[in-house]
Each structure stands twice: as structure tokens, then as C-alpha cells.
Image 1 (spheres, helix red, strand yellow):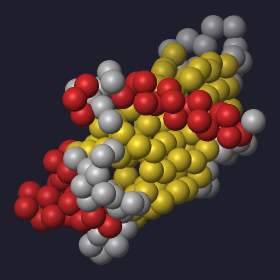
Image 2 (cartoon, helix red, strand yellow):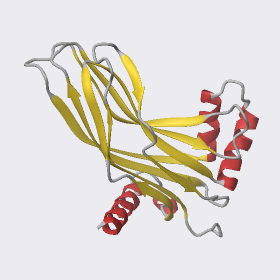
Image 3 (tube, one colour):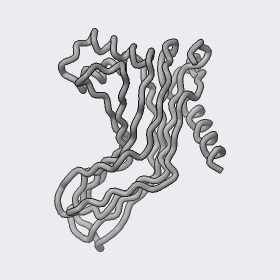
Length: 209
């Protein structure tokens, strides 16, 4: 069952690729994938206070080097549910966080990004306790330039040239990805992410291993 689910997810990602990458370049191969078949729940210790809470690591995987690839396709899907208290106002920003580590990243330089699962607020909570839920899907085409620009945005000490060198090194050396959930909320009793699945594709037709 698990293998069927993984391959089914990979196929859906491949089909989605044709909507975000020019057809001439839409030849990809799966290079990394992982999923978590358990629920991860964040329970704020004091729901009445606006605060940020982060879960332990949910899943992790290694992305191998892809020096000949012009881009990496990063895809994710997850099921989420947020339960409110009877109080108002209600605020929920629920994100799947990804932290990237690699020997290609110099000391003191960080690289992390988030995939939004839900973001809502209610000034009036109506009849009281309730829940909201859904499925979050995300597809990102990551080029060296995209990585370099993002590195400069997140690390103000980097120059554009240095960021470009680091971005290329990430493609050359590969990297490790660690995922967790982050909830910024008020009057939320719990937030759960279920069955998160992440797949990474590289451009095919190269000599990369």
C-alpha cells in the first residue's frame, strides 16, 4: 500500500510539472522522496495568547547532487486540521517548515522556507468550538538563480556573487532536508498535519547519479 501511494504521488507531481515548466524542459526524474504516515499535532500551552509553536521533526531526507540539472522541482502535499476554542478572536497560521543543511552552506548561513497549509482569522467565533481542515499542495521550481536570490534575502551579509557560488555548490554537492510544522495562533486548541509527502525531481537526460 505504501509503495502504491508513493508512486501515485510521484505521478501526480510529474503531471503538475507540465503546468509550471515549459514543455521543452518538462523531462524530470525523481531523486528524493519521503512521507510520514502518522499525525503530528501542535497543542499550544496557552491558547488565549498569540504565540508561535513548532513541532519536532516530522520527516527528513537527502537530495543527491544534480550538477547537470538546470532546476530542481520541489513538491509537497499534506492534510491539515485546526481546532478552535470557544473564544474570539481566532488566529491560525499553519506552515510546513523545511530546513536545508549542506556542506555547501558556509558557517552562519541558513536556508529554510515554509509551505503554507492554512492562514485564517475570525473576529467572531460564532457558536463556539469548531474546526477547519483541508489539503495543502505546493510545487516550486528551484533554479540556481532562485536559490541565490533567496539566500541574499535571508542572509543580509551575503553578496550576490557569493550567493550564486553557494547556490551552485548546493546543486553540485546536494543537501539534507528536515521538515517540521509551525503554528502561530490564538484561541486554537490544536493543529494537526497528517500524511505529509515530499518529493524532489531533477532534470533528466543528464549524467547525474
